[in-house]
Image (cartoon, rainbow, N blue to C red; front, side, top):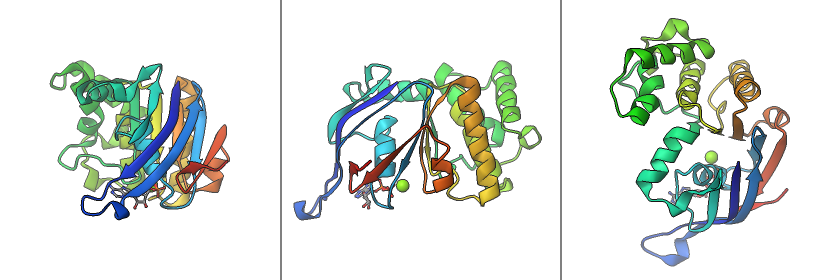
Length: 226
Ligand code: ADP
Ligand code: MG
């Protein structure tokens, strides 16, 4: 499903080369279809940077990422954005919902982008269906600031899966939630993996969550340590 080869990331300091940050130092990994992989490691190890690169959000300084045999960074930004829109879902610690839009509109947005159209009746139906899948049928018209953290994260999950991506990248999806709410979010992600065979790559601090993965990748000082 996903192959990363010798990924390096250097954040260049525009003023002095001595202040360049070499965050990833030759990371190689692969993820099988349907697998649940947890990426763990200390704060600052480069987990978020790696996840963004794997998902086509951030250019590596060196190395290649293949998503279903497509070399992500051989494409231009527009083509890569299209692949992200259709094949990849992202879930972030702080949800990143659009504050001006209600839950349904946030969920449907990737479908509107995919078909380059306004919200159609069909999309509205599909959006409602996905909100139902995440248990939010009663919160369709609510804006993000009217929703709890757990509800916002469930909206973000519905948004991430509306285009039925092959793979979901989650960056500390429960990092801002209490443990019970976080558990509910993880249960939901596990169910999506079981039912839709959606591959999950998840950065987490939480040992208990990592234990539920098929495989754990330990990142330390920009390298895969175990
Ligand atoms: P993690 O998610 O494991 O905590 P990150 O990938 O967010 O780690 O960050 C890894 C390192 O890269 C940190 O030292 C961070 O300060 C640095 N870093 C992240 N983004 C940038 C950036 N845009 N410019 C410079 N340094 C950055
Ligand atoms: Mg991080």
